[in-house]
Amino acid sequence: MLFKSTNFGDDKDRALKKSDKSWTYFASDVAYHNNKLNRNFDTLINILGADHAGYIKRIIASVEALSNKKNKLICKVSQLVKLIKDGKPFKMSKRKGDYITAEDLINEVGKDATRFIMLNRSSDVELDFDFSKVKEKTKDNPLYYVQYCYARISSVFRHAKININQEVNIKSYNFNYSSEEIKILKKISQWPRCIDIASKKLEPHRMPVYLYELASEFHSYWNLGKENEDKRFINKDNKVSDDKIALLKAISNLIKSGMDIVGVHSPEKM
Image 1: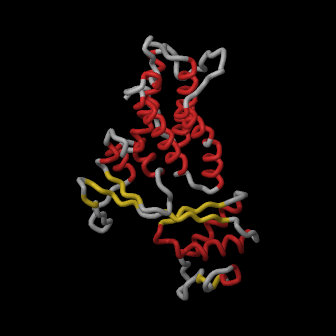
Image 2 (image 1 turned 180 degrees about the vertical axis):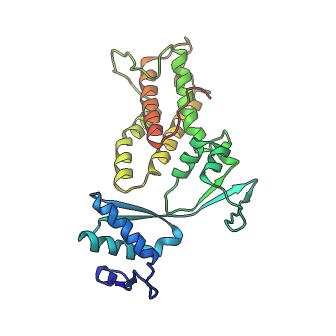
Image 3 (image 1 turned 60 degrees about the vertical axis):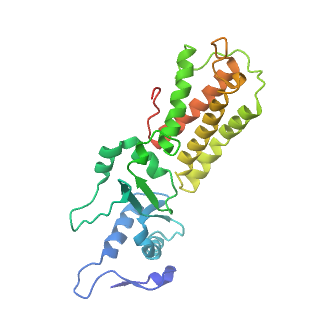
């Protein structure tokens, strides 16, 4: 039994049933997608491994035939993840019983690191997941750098005796921000567009990448305070001015919101 998938743009027609009357793997996939269509989803999304990229045309053809609609199915190809342990590639083999499950990975580095690092790159780019680096407390560890941004802001709010989770009480917003602060505010203004593009293009990596960039802007500004008192969030009178509070609140709100979307914790202390 053949499916005339060439009528829908495939390279060749595909077998649904073998000569011995048994069904092919492709037939079960067709049935599965038909079940999804019967549940009245507007759009179907498949996430395929890199070794299944050649499978896309036939499955899109089957969905088009079943639904009589083009562009009903979107296929995203995800490249492989290379695990690196003790500075060496960790080679896995199911046959030898030598492999790591997602549960093993979470137990080793935690769910926050697993989720954030996995999402921190485009699905069409190979990822080197280094067990040691995801535990480092450095700029090279994107999760730590973003979480440390939120923790630093939380420390300033504690000093000012302000609850970071509540609205701030500022009566006048007539501030005169520096060029460095305006640069951060401009970055904050780009967040809605980042969310929009990530959603429409099905590219969630844009969110953790953006959060890392914002955290980098913040840490760079924080470090300026080591040489310039005007850049410090806690001034020489041991107080935090309203303009600094408003800026920090905007950054913390965005970091917390973004991390919640990604599904990662935002610690107030580190």
